[in-house]
Image (cartoon, rainbow, N blue to C red; front, top):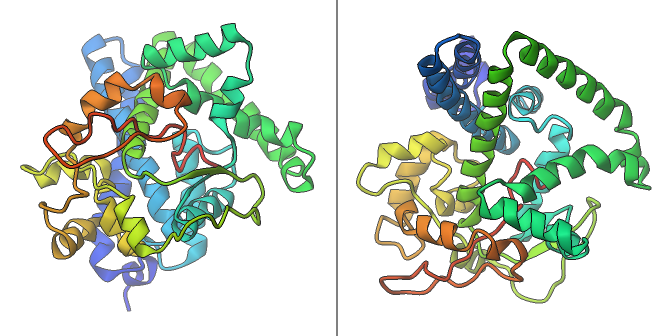
Amino acid sequence: MSTSKLLYRYADGRVWNSLAIAYSVGGYLIGLGLLLTPFWLAKLGGLLLLAHAMIIGAYLIHEFAHGTIFSKPAHNALAGEVFSWMTGGCYADFQDLRRKHMRHHVDRADVITFDSKAFINGLPNWARKLILALEWAYVPAVELIMHFYVVLLPFISHSEKHRARRGKVLTVLLIRTALFALLGWLSFSALVLYCVAWLIMVTVLRFADAYQHTYDAFAVLEEDGKIPADKLRDRAYEQLNTFSNVVSLRWPSLNLLLLNFAYHNAHHEKPVAPWYRLPNLHAELYGDAYRQVVPMSELLSSFHRHRVRRVLSDDYGEFVDGPKRAENFYGAVGVSFLTAV
């Protein structure tokens, strides 16, 4: 048996996974290098390449969490930690991220550790208005708050488990601060553009996440925290409240831009199916005429119009049948697999 077959979980994933990993790592390094050049056209290209490399890296973390890439769980965990550094999710342990995401599948709910709506509503009026103003200006303030929460949690929690992470978080903060300081010393514009690239990644992830479910959201801090048994959350419920917000129906290959993450119904039907099999699995199970298939072109207007409303809305709005079926589909906020840890 060859080394590649031992390395990857599925034999048909050797080429696809190698290309995805190489693109993400290579794009990250090349994009960063382009940001350091004195030419603004090169900087712009580097910004876009870096942002997309981090987007693919984020979706690879999702694959590592499901164990669909490497044959050994330890290899998936190690890769998940490495790519978490690339995407800024390194303040939380990969295994904690994985367990929280698995609850999303098992409980068929948006299980989060931080109730952003309750937090924002509890702020002084000026602070709440500032957050809403940032969201109006397309700054992902809620996701930024949730990332800061992950950093602060070990220092404000009474849980011994969280307090035990103080050393790791401080170490990560020191290393990342030193690296960002070095980047800023080499080129201040490169540091600013790096931050912009990261914000682009977060915005793309939150747009994709916003319209993939109409699940109930529950803030559950501890691993064994239970969600209310107030309704039957079976597989029929799961599919009815899951949407495949594909990048394009006309050009399916464009869904590779998000590592096929948009084929979300197929992913939830078979969570161990790797990303490169999802288009065929989706076609076999549903086809493009499936009610739950919603092209992103139908969601852009809703994402724009409801960008402030979804921050404090008690629900995700409604998806109805008809020509304007997503008009009042507000979408979720703060449920990304990178921030909901």
